[in-house]
Every structure is written in C-alpha cells, then in structure tokens.
Length: 73
Image 1 (tube, helix red, strand yellow):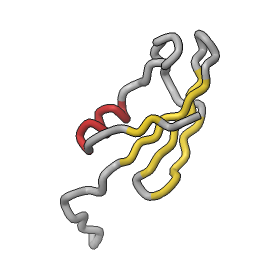
Image 2 (cartoon, rainbow, N blue to C red; image 1 turned 180 degrees about the horizontal axis):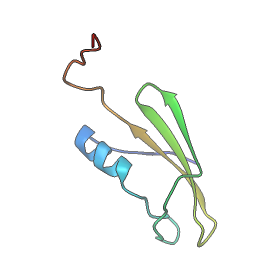
Image 3 (cartoon, rainbow, N blue to C red; image 1 turned 90 degrees about the vertical axis):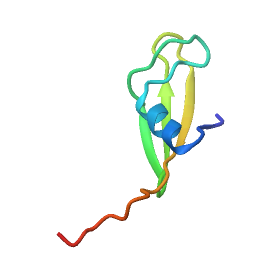
Image 4 (spheres, rainbow, N blue to C red; image 1 turned 30 degrees about the vertical axis):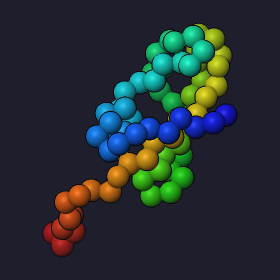
C-alpha cells in the first residue's frame, strides 16, 4: 500500500479533518482503523472500506505552527 501524500498546509488541515472516499468503490469512510504518529507532524492512517473490503493508507504532513507558542503559563 502506497500512502497518499497531501499538498499545502491549509489544504492538508482541511483534508485531514475530512473523511476519505474509498479509492475502489467511492464510499465515504467514517474512521480510520489505525492512526500512527510516524514523526513530528507526520501521521499515517490505515483505512478499511466496509462496503468492498479494500484496505488503503493515507499520510498527512502537518506544518508546524507559524506563531510561537508561549508555554510559560
């Protein structure tokens, strides 16, 4: 299974929060079977379609925040 890599930051975030369609039958999936934090900002989701049984993997690469975070509170 080859991960599907997503594009620019804003698109990544929007796409990551959307539910994917099965690449074989087009049915919308509700939740990943498994999610794995591969590295900081790199997430791999494993999916299995309930309609046709097709298994596939998506990969999301999130950009670090552009605004500094103040953790001194």
